[in-house]
Image (cartoon, rainbow over all chains, first blue to last red; front, side):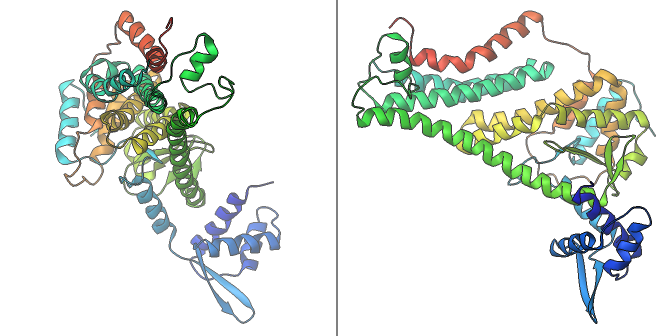
Length: 122
Length: 303
């Protein structure tokens, strides 16, 4: 049994790759090329994705056409920026390897590296 | 007898003088795990001292009964001890006040944990849609032009690295960075961060709270650095840090308080100087003893 999150990822993957409005039927058929997925399950999860704000939809006759809200790149960038944003009222939910530094601090890092006679990769 | 003045004096030492001493000492950065333990011990000790002082203030004429039950009662800990057949208002206050202090701390801890957990869950939910899981790296790769790495600690943890970082760093550098992030997750560092946050929420004006929150974050980074250095070269970690810092948009110069990155870099590259075993041993004993000191002040044995 796959987790719900995996199915969400599979569905979003289709909409991002196709970059056009598509029906649940198209998505199910495409997923079924790789594995079995029930139409009702995919419908439910697609509706969840719509309510979460990841998809938009428009009615075409009796069926819904869904479309990704933004591109994968835009989504990815927004997420990363959310991850890297540091603010006083939002304490460390994520622990970064190194935060943004100012020019003086970067110069201090460079100097520390040089002082021990080691070179950063070009 | 009443121990409130002594307890308040003790709290002042722990809350104001001790953090100043800690910040000036060199050893915490050489033994960061021990340093983190001391900060935690100081916070626990201050909380207990405040709770006990509140209890003593509520019962100005409280005297110490002989025996363990009386001792616990005098310390406001004898919840189930039927010492007096008719508990007075003072008795109830003596119990309620310390409970209020402890409840505030525990409540704030749970609040910060839940709030950060919620932020992480939302982030992870979106991450799992757009990120690419890499079995080789044991991390999720996210498309982004900024070289960056971070972790989502806690249950269902994730290590996240941008594809820019994967392209920028050599394999060894990347492994060192990922090992650093894994150390945060394995060490449950988010619990210590939440504890320091909780303490600062309850005692916002206290020097100990402000210092502990800032220092704890730095010490946890150093602990993770040390962990990465067990299996990776100093050079790999230091150059990775430089590459990632230099590859990002510089921040506006509003950040005060000095950067932890520079301290970490010097530490990674510098000679490894573990503290003398005698110093280590005595500091470790202090870390264990400090939380118990308020009890001794409140209930001196043999009285």
